[in-house]
Amino acid sequence: PREKVDHLIANEDPTILGDNGISTSTNSLGTDQGVLDDLAHYSDITNILVLGVDSPDGIGRSDAMMILTVDRTTSKIKLTSLIRDSYVYIAGHGMDKLNHAYAFGGASLALRAVNTNFDMNITDFVRVNFSSLPHIIDKIGGLDIDLTAAEAKTVGVPSKGLNHLNGAQVLTYSRDRSTAGGDFMRTTRQREVMMLMIKKLMKLTPVEMIQTVDQLLPMVKTSLTSGDILG
Image (cartoon, rainbow, N blue to C red; front, side, top):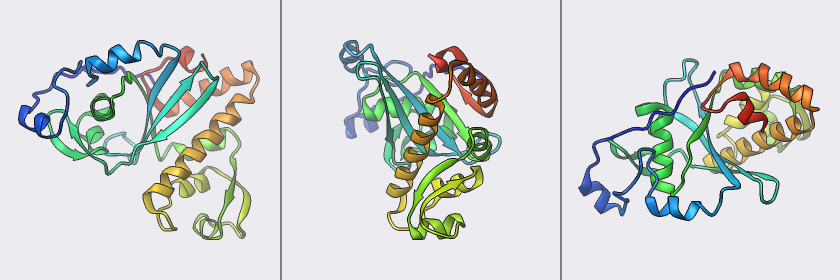
């Protein structure tokens, strides 16, 4: 379902802004005017904030945060993870962990926090509940993922190497922090899952792609239209 982005006007604390070198001349989504001027040269690049929320009703912290970049100059799609425990400025709430922004003010405040702290100009988002991810993966037929021995044990498959995983197994894999690497490796797994999903979708015929988007859209919240996504 589509969800609009609210342009937030927050009570900023000039002392906190000054102490942390944060711009005081931002727009309602937290982007500095200088960044807007620079990004005018990059009209062929679109950035979308991807949020993973551990709550069926969509209320809570965004424990997975990525920037999905569509680069039309190179015809490539890129993913950048944002570490959820990053200590950042959140408008109206001072300094706090990045993933708290969504809990404080939903996707709009999460967008503002990312724009303010990382010099971005992102205006759109996609939010996925972790409870929906297995259904999305199953809709596209599962994913083939190369597992280490430790990952295979966590996921519950008999051997390491390339394994075909269903939706529930992919969710366990993408949320795993029990094996080596902690949160950094977890973000690597999440990017791998996202890219495998995108590559699988890109192999569909135009008709199949339209049908699949229609099936998947009810499972996510986004500021994008189905036409935006297909484009």
